Image (cartoon, rainbow, N blue to C red):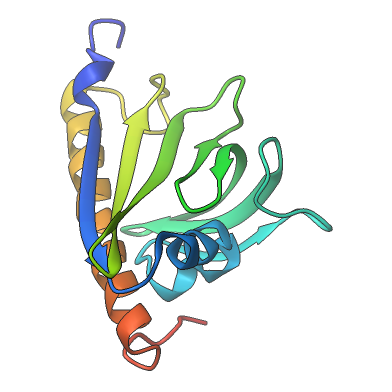
Amino acid sequence: MNDIDLTELTFTRQAWVDAAPADVYRLVSDVSAIGRWSPNASDVAYDDGVGPEVGTWFSGHNRKDDKEWTSRSQVVKAEPGTVFAFVVGGAEDGIVEWSWTLRAQGRGTVAEQSWRLLRTDPVLGRTRADLVALRDYMAASAETTLTALAEWVTNPRSVTPRP
């Protein structure tokens, strides 16, 4: 897999959210809430006694198709109202970086969710086609998450949290 160009294995999706950047930041940095919006993540929680600060860790249950697993992630950026990012597998040897970038627009916020493959790993796929398919799957997941987040902010009863 050394011939795979990682620069193409990234994406950014965005949505306008009817809330101030500081409020959106509080929502997305509260990793325990991601199950309200994400079609793939649930049961996410910071390690005991910690929160959204650079260096802190959290675990979450993930699913894709018929596979389920638990992942460990480490916060790498935590700038209230601006950016929240974490690396699956940890900052030093992680596999994927997820980030939220927030900027005010009108009375609300443009929320961008980005995904970037940091290194290849057979668990993610063995070919370029596998990794492109994973990127595309995660991009669709991010679009679903952003839409659900925007709808939930407008009407918290519109999106039902999963068990």
